[in-house]
Image (cartoon, rainbow, N blue to C red; front, side, top):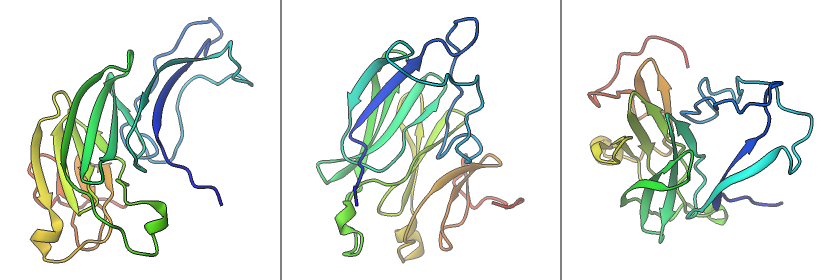
Length: 203
């Protein structure tokens, strides 16, 4: 069985994507599997083939190990990685040029259980973007909110410390302007107050 690890980020543009031959601005991809978490891209129809004449690499960046998917919001691309087996890092890149805008980090490395060890002890949670803020779930059951413009940490919640028990898995989704930490032991939190959010809907 082949194992795949995201070790580089490549941004490519398909030319043209419309009948008129113009490049259409891409839709934002602010969380795991896109705006509605169904993996569907709403945009112009792609051509039947993507050869060198249609697909051109715009920029490329090497990444540290991690399973997190990159997301796209506003004019930036955000990644979550594990650095030196000690820290979780979040980086923001300019969508047009690939230049790194900021980097934030915290201690977040851990050794995963034996049954998952072969897959690597790396960051797993895809971040979520909403209203100028970036929400990141760490391997050690922390939920971190960053200012998407500057990378400044706005708040951090340590669920393992607060609940006195591991939550065994953290995923961050956008839902009704709240940040959800998907775990039976970690209730939904308001993105602005980090307090338990009122739940009105079905996931």
